[in-house]
Image (cartoon, rainbow, N blue to C red):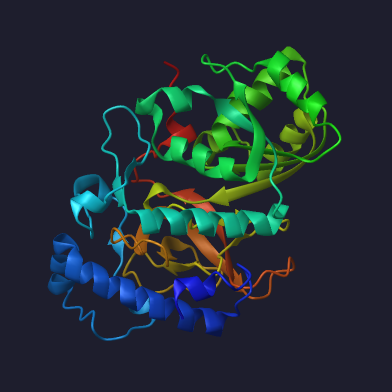
Length: 358
């Protein structure tokens, strides 16, 4: 099965056995492609004694530690075909990942994100309230994973308004006008978890103001480390969001710059779901063997999208556990899992986790 054939199937519509066959075929092709076109990746596979010409199960494919992208320029296309270089967010002085994208990979990332999010909100474009600052578009130094996420999510919206000004303060006049203008229709919101908490939820609580939305959907990503330090879990976050924003459906999702587009959205039962285009494997940190259901380990992410760089099989620095396959009460097929956070020795990642007021 090809990626184009996958796009013809609902994003959570393949049972485990069918998905394994489809992904193993696509990942086999990507592994061979990157082996032939990315010299650094080829040397890694040679050192591992891995033969990319032989078909393997998904769990047998060699993974790259995600931190390698901070050290090496891993690219599988000629420089003239690069249309965008994405950098991961990071704290000041930290190395950042550099991800090289060609037009096909960008298009597939956008299409995948569209298929996944549309399965939650429908195909129509909704009035969009971005819980961030418009400075993202004006300051190119801020264009990293955070900026790419904001711009990528904008395809689902219309009449877009940024809720925060250049000083990260809520522009209540602008937001109030937006809410009044669209009070008779659903409103879509997007932002980064900690920034929503710090600059929207806490700011509204301290000022005693509210948005009072009647029908809204909020997608948010990243930034749980600081919230956990404040003893704020997902239930508390959702409750406090609704207390100041109004009637809001809240969806957390998980993803990274190194596999843009392959996002894992949390369903109404609190489970992170793998779509047809991606999968998760939990590995024991002692020997990298595959962990069982309910067993904590390192999260490995598989993606059918990266054709311009070898990011199709990555070992993250996050800890999680597999909860089940094809049997979530929400009805979505595929594996679903829980994230427990960063491993202790890992660097603090960027986006909202490491936002620093300028």
